[in-house]
Length: 617
Image 1 (tube, rainbow, N blue to C red):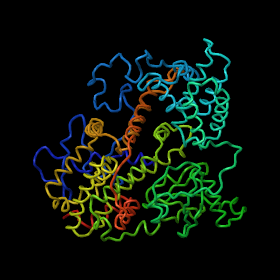
Image 2: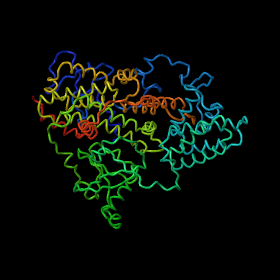
Image 3: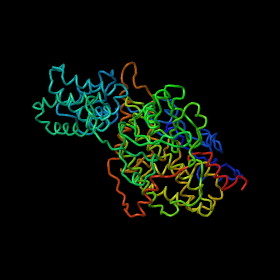
Image 4: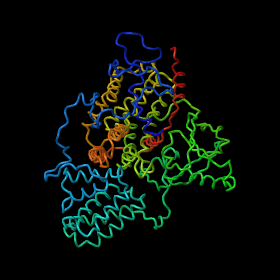
């Protein structure tokens, strides 16, 4: 299961709805602090956890009404909405009369864009041509592979004349598109060998015609700088020697690694990873992030000095993921980028098919040692600030196109969504961290104090505009294994009960997360949104309408997708400034926050919960 599928199963509340008349609550289960009685339009979920202990969750369903904005909170579709305005969106029309682009065949859309761009480059901000340019660059992979897109651009540049004879105007338009393309893609092009070759050819052609662009010297200089910065990868070029190996968090618990500033991952990056054997011994391999299962097994085989005869027989090695719950899954040889899709406490095992049934989780994932951890000794402000700083680093590492590729399964595939998947994994990790810390605290008084501290941390994260951490903590506190701790919640001061009630209202999914969206709209950058909800909106746009209608590109759909991506740009348009000291104590807190030890086995969390407060208490 992808990280998004787990995160979007966000509980409205794991707690039972408040009954309309006074009645005794179910035994050993605290009342919801905020959930109102279920309305006829929104039936209440089950009071207890669903099979597997997961509770009631949101579902991704194809919309039954025509495509509309994901931010529209109206639950009744067209019934509760005002009639649509006949005017196009503001971004699709400009002062010079550029109207919205008409649907066109994929091969014709780029031509239409080049015809709309003015002779001196793109229009000013907010103009229809500029908006269409950005829409197509961000979403062209939905209807046209990048290599084909660049080949079309190359063909337009070398054409002897346009229909109106204005070859110079056409070349300048191609230059404008290429500049915007390079500015948008940047590091992603290091993975595109075929695209890199086309770009270099087009770049050389433009540099030969420099005399045609005397009034565009700044653009030519910018093009030169971008091509040099991107370091385009060409098939016949040798790779740079001594490439640095990047550490994935949770693969190694090294202080020096987790204290480093996070950098973006690319498919060609090399990492260290442990692959375990059935007896829990392991080999450490060095592999590309985008390596296939077959490549990983080849490295393991080489480490184990497996002979070719053995690997060709029935006892050949297979690669298996083993979760802390004991769940196992065999990976197919053609699968790629498996490292970033592993669960929080999942590990890779290499075994033969005969030993598959004997695989069990690592002992440290099963054995639980209760006791005080670092969180009891650190101020909530320090933990919240370090959470925000780390999540900002992870959020900044995500390329905006990863959001499109993750939902629409673009041509670049899984390897270009590694940074997004790591952030989703981190969000799930924080949720389980909340439950782990509470359930490992055996003293009722300390547990109530820790519950109060976690609510404080959520409040500070919200103040920092880190809505990802805020959401994750609230979801973690609504875990069924935590919400059933009636004695613990009763000892919580009334002030914090009221505060958590507000937090539950803010994360309420009713009317398409209306309350959260209103709060987010009032925030100014920098901010960290609840990323799974962005992916849910993109999924809505994807399933709500077709990309191609009768062979014509649905330009309105492309514009809606691009608008959602542009909101991510806005969130990151300013740097985050947090005053974090570099003292030994702060470095210890930083290491703790970045390497959380969590229990992600829901059954084990329930066992701990019932030990602390048995059901009949």
